[in-house]
Image (tube, rainbow, N blue to C red):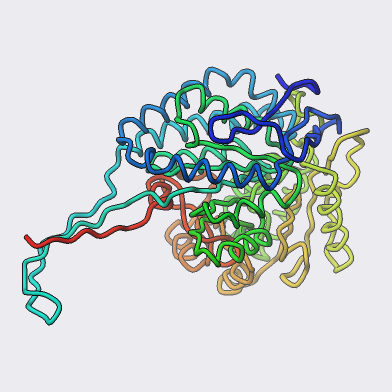
Length: 488
């Protein structure tokens, strides 16, 4: 679907326009070849997109929930029709393996459209019982009625990460559109092509001009201009904590609402009574699921010393059994990371860990691949919480193992982190695991599984973010409370 000759443009106020600052190359992480060129937005493009969204907001916010639900459902159906074409495109720009690309990159986006088509019909308002108010110098006494209603926040800048560009973007725009917001999409610079195709779908199914806009670019100025634009009322961002903090600062002068899902360093407590088979299967997902490029991964294993040797041996065997290779090969389990820069960062973290005294049990630095940005499954054992690869988010196929002696120590190690997004507890004593989970400072905690629950609120403690989305919390995130009161 994507070739070097394909022309990609930005959607601004219902018009498809070229990048005001030209184009830039999108590189296939698997072979380092140019997939296509994407538009490089100018400051004027960004301002125009935000202004178009602001102009479209009053009419869109007054549409009925049924109208919005029908358009979102239509978007899901059309995305499903185009999935066979889009999967090869998203694999080529993200480097996702065939299994991750076909199961997670587009199908999950479809399900999110379906979920928020239903969500558009949810009534988030809260009628309040009448309240008698006595006379005051302000007004005569009365029996006052009241309604707390949810109203759309306005124009939302939706900035998605590179690991799941389409799925993440739909997770932002679907609930925002469902409640009556307008949006400016800004995909990650590394892989915007499938999100541009998503914008085409939204236009095709009938979203009005200006309700959905998209700007793209390889320069940091594109995102910076968007998050500081006075027409933007809210920023929904998924990415690094460092960038998130800059966005918060940029939005402070205009009090922009913020929804941020940021970095993670998932603690995974493996108790002395854990089912090691389940623990190994869950932890190995760091390597096999999109090459560890997921902020929810159990990358920081905290294991009881009595099970330490067994777990390290089993993890080493699992890591060595995984096949690194071309994402288009159905037998490949570990594909490339997104870019040469990210590969260099990951290798630097591995080298720092070794220099700080960690044991390099499985070395993924040399994969034997002739081209592409590959890092193989890597296991660092004998770690402690002072080491940089234990403390910092690596966002790659690297697992670190830290031993503990008592339950209290294990919990303390888990909480001794700047992050708190998604953590895990493995213990066959599930009531005990539940009690441990309650003591972990993390937005989500999984017990004996790395699976998720899409209706639970999702977000992080500490540097892992601000706010929550997921399920009906996603609708809540893009709204403001408005109170209307009257004498009964």
